[in-house]
Image 1: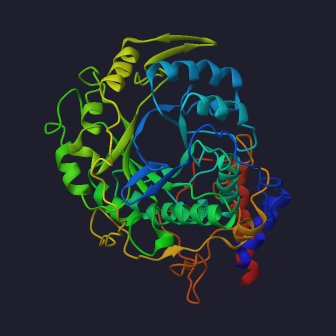
Image 2 (image 1 turned 90 degrees about the vertical axis):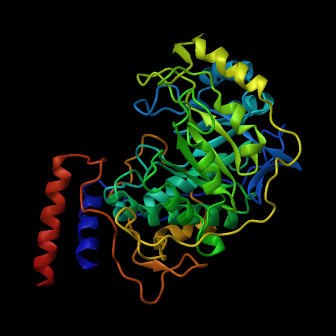
Image 3 (image 1 turned 30 degrees about the horizontal axis):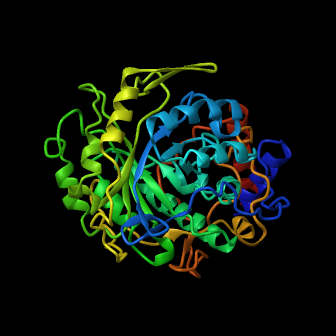
Length: 450
C-alpha cells in the first residue's frame, strides 16, 4: 500500500482529497422529534405502525429532479408548499432522493408528521455514492461518513420510515452485478451504525432497478447470509403495469416469485405512462392477492420534470395540479389500506445466496470489510455531514482492504485487497489535473519501490 499512501498524501497536500478519516465532533443525541406519528417497524414480511399493519401508499418526491441537487426538506417554503398538495392526495409516505446532511430538517419533518406522512430517505447523493463502474474505490471512508451523517440527520424523527442504501446501482448489465457486494456492505454498515449509535431500529434496504435479468438473484442476495448482512426489506421499481391488469402486467407471477421471501417488499417506483395513467396498480396493491407479499408502493412522481412522469407542475411558489393529480388522489381514496394483517407471514427467513452465471457475476458470499477509518464513526459518531457542497467521495479516501467475517464487519486474517468492477474513472472526476497528478505519483511511487 506504499504507493497508494504516497499518492493520497500528495493529493491531500494539493487540496484535492481530504485524507483525514477522523470524525468531527458529534453533537449530543437529540430527543425524538416529529412525535405525532408512531414509529414504523419491520416484522415478518410486513411493516407495522404499533400493532397496525402499515402499507406504503406514497409518492416519490424530488422537485427539480436529479439535475438540481437540492434538499426539499431543508427549505421550509418548498416543503410547506408541497405538504398541502400531499394532504390533498392522501398519501402517507414520500420518498426523498437527495437530502443535505448538514442542514436542519425539523420544520419540514414536523409538517409532514402533522399531515400523517412518513419519509423514506435515500442515504446517497450525486457526490457521495457507489460507482457501479468501479465500486471498490468508491466504497471509502469519506463516503461512509456522509452516509452515516445522513442517518444522524433523520434518525431522531419518528416519521422517518426507512433508509435506502442504494438506488438502481445494479442495472441490466452483467458487469454492474459486481457492485452488489459493496451495496450490501453499505446496508450492513448502516444497520450496524444505527445499532451502535443507540437509535431505534430504523429499517434499511435497497431500491432495485426495473430489470428482469437479475431481479430475483439480487433480491435473494440482499436476503442471504448472516443476520447482520441481510436487509430489513427489499424494494424495486416496476413500470410493467401500463393501464393493463394484474395478469397482463405480469404482477401475478411476481407475487408467486416473492411468496415466502421472508422480508417486507414494496415498490419504490411505479406508474407507467405509456397508455395513460389511471393508477389501477393501487387496486391490486391493496387487494388480498398482493397484501400477503407486498406492502404497497410509491408512485413516480410528484413534480413534473422533462421525463413527463410528474403529476404537478411547479413554478416558484405556484403548483398547478395536472389531470393525473386528481386521478391518483381518486385511486388512493377508492382503494384504502386493508384492515387486519393482510395475510402477512409472521416469521422472517433468509434465502440461499444465488450462484454465479452469465448474468450474475458475484461468486463469493463474503462482503468487503468496512474501511478502518470508518470504524471510528461507530463509537464517536459521523460528525457534521459534508452536505451537497462537499468535495465528493469518488476515488478518494481510505477504501476496504479485504473481506469481512460474517457477523463482524471486520477484516478476516486472510483479507485481500481485491476490488470488483471494471477499472474506469468514476463520474466525479474533478479535472484533468487530478488524473495527471495521480499518474505521476503512481509512477514515482513505483520507482521508489524498485
